[in-house]
Image (cartoon, rainbow, N blue to C red; front, side, top):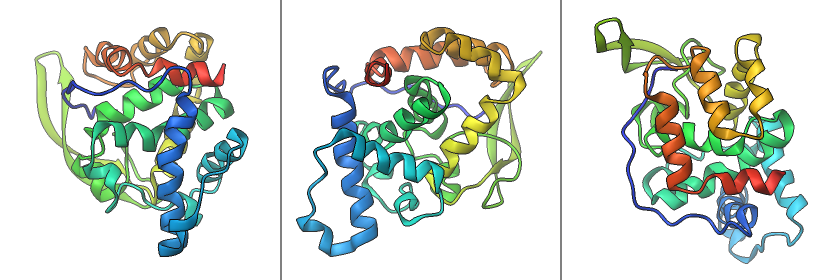
Length: 231
């Protein structure tokens, strides 16, 4: 993926003591509103954290179900604050870490960097949180991107995978990272910084500063707390 964006600062870090609860509360409210509409005003999130993670797992395992509706289209997470975006991505990232071992902090940081906090044209038009090239479940989206070669950075057009939902985008990105080319990086699953460097080393992105940017984002927004929630 060669789709990157500048890092922007200024956000409140999630409470390290209750990372999953904070992330899941707002996100599940969004999901219920999408499924139940106005009747969701009387809904209260389940007190059992396992039930909440079950919702996120359902979005990943059944990406075309109502629970996995395109959050990036017409929702507050696409146009709201950075905290809103983290709250929307975190439960999917945590559930995916439980399923695959890929650090949730890296997943969230990649989504932030590659989708420009959910505001990139690729994310808005194709529900693609990551700039993975090719044809996805919902076809392809052709857009501008920046590549790095021997002569430095240069702009070009390319086709990127399109999806029906953000959950579908995250699940597809996991499938890519579980292929032989990147799978070896899972030995660093308990060390997000090392994992980020390993997939970068394996050719995930052409930007020479890609892994450094991910690490900076993880530190700036205390994304490691979501890994602690899984451990």
